[in-house]
Each structure stands twice: as structure tokens, then as C-alpha cells.
Amino acid sequence: MKIKQRFSFCLVLMLVVVGLQKGSAQSSPKFDAQSGPPTMNELLQVHEKFVYEVKYGFFKLGKVYVDIVGDTLSRGVKTWHLQTIIKSNPGIPFVGREENHYNSLMAVGKDGKPYTTVFWTDNVDEGEYNDTRYIFNRKEGKVYSFEKGEPKDTLNLEEPASSGHIVFYFSRLFAGTHQSYRIPIYISHEKGYLTANNTTHTEEREYAAFDHPVKTYKSEGNADVDGPFGFRGKFTAWFGADSLRLPLEAHVKVWLGHVKVRLIKYTRTTKYQPRNVSETQ
Image (cartoon, rainbow, N blue to C red; front, side, top):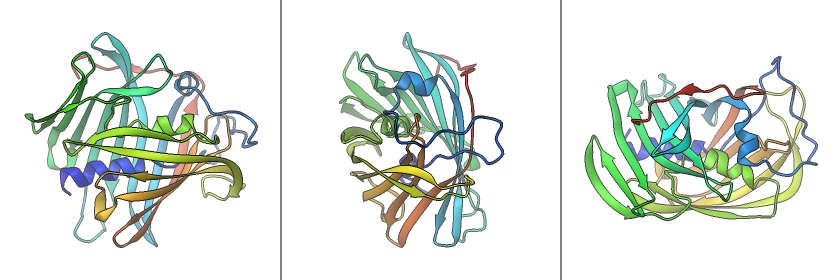
């Protein structure tokens, strides 16, 4: 896949899904639609791990793994290392084995919203590490982009600046409310926007990761970015009506039809116990 396609594929998946693993030792979330959305502090008090499955019709395109793997200081600011690993289904014709890692150092601003200090990608299957990199320099008000170690562009920074990766957390702060949001996204050495509209209406939906139907909130939005297979535009996502607003499902339209992303495994511990990450990232 091209670099832009691989990253945009990650962005689409970040709009998505979470559920609880069957038989898990943790307590199950209460989908009662009574609590308000979480704060970033509440989300970071638990250590969550997610595994998703991506399907087009009956075809399984691959799996996605999401985890905060550690914390560190980035230019004197405490950050969390959010990592997403995408592995393709090697049986898909013309694709084969693809494994790509997406990394963000994520901080929390005074307004309680997440933002990115550094974003980078690793094309593991081809042995290319740090093949794209974005540095968000708030002192200078600039975003510096790199490809294969070489400078590519310098863009004006607009908050809450990121490369889209933190949508996984940002969207949960608004799910189950009437609030909409619009965030700038720096990808492909350009700036685009992602917007989303939320609702307080609930509906029950069934997921393989649960042994019972769960209450959900729906969110609809538009991604003004270039995605894989012609994706550029509208999406729909569902979040759990629980205290952590677990994202449960997403539908996005591409040139060959609709792609669905759904959770197959979720685990969490009640206290976050990170591993340290080098500040040199």
C-alpha cells in the first residue's frame, strides 16, 4: 500500500469500535445510558487493550490492535504513547502480508482535550521504520512533516493539532451528547478536517464480543481526508452508552462498497501501569 493509503486506513479505523471480551475477569461495563461522557483523566485511569476485525461483506480484510504502551516526557510535557498495529489478512489477493504500526505521543491540554506532540509510522513488513513522521511544534506554531527521514513540508499549526490518531480518544469525550466537533488532521503532508455530529438517542445493537444486546449512541461525520480505496467523506460510528463511551462499530464507504469495523476483543485493568518510553521519540 502507499504511505498515504496505509495511514488513512488507520485514520478510518480510529473512528471505530470497542467491546468487552467474553469471559473476561473484569467487571462488565453498565450500558444504562445514565452517565455523562468521560473525561480524559477518567479514560487514562484505566489501561485498555483493543482488538478489532475489519470486514468487507464476508471478506475479512485484517485486524487492528490498539494500546497505550507507555508514558514519557516530550519536550517537558507528560505524554502517553498510543500505538495502533494493523495486520492485513494475508489471504487477500494483491495485498499479502501487511503490518504497519502507528504511534502518537499524546498529551492532555488545560481544556481537558488530547493533542499530539509527535506522530510516526513503521512499515514493519517492509522493514522501514519511522518512514513518516510529524512533529507538532507549538512554540513555533508549526507542523513539520518528514518522509523516510527527509523533510517534506512545514504547515501552520491549528489546535487541537494531530495526525488523526487521537480521534480514538477525542470522539469518546462527545459521544452521547448533542455536541459536535471539528478537528484539524495533518496527513499526507497536508491539513484536512474531521467533523462529527452526536446524539443522545439510544438503540440496542448486538455484537459478537457480548453475550447480550447493548445500548449504543450513534455518531455521524465527515472526514475531509484521502482514505483507502477512494474513502473520503461520510462515516457512521456507534459508541457504548456506558461511562467510558466504548466505541463499538463504524461503517465507512469506499469505492467498492461499505467497510465495517467491529470489536472482537477488549481487556482492561482498573489502574494504568505504563512502561516508560524513551524521550528521544
